[in-house]
Amino acid sequence: MPGIFIDIEVDEAVASDAELAQKLSEVCAVDIFALRNGKLEIIEDNLDECVLCDLCIEAAPKGALRVIKLYE
Ligand code: SF4
Image (spheres, rainbow, N blue to C red):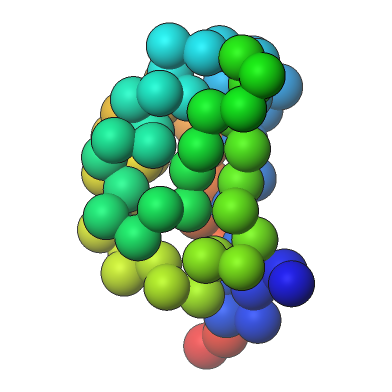
């Protein structure tokens, strides 16, 4: 199920970078990122667990990953 409160957008260059996908899966404490078949997978069921720590944003190239709050 997609997140109600949080969505995450990643550029294709990030999604297809296995090394970066692995790094993202390590930094996110709530398991929103996984590496599957050499590509980044976003685990939609976990999106709303995001704690807005920004570690994924810091791990990715500038502007290539966005955590979007769907609420005010
Ligand atoms: S902001 Fe933190 S909790 Fe949210 S997806 Fe990124 S690393 Fe995970």
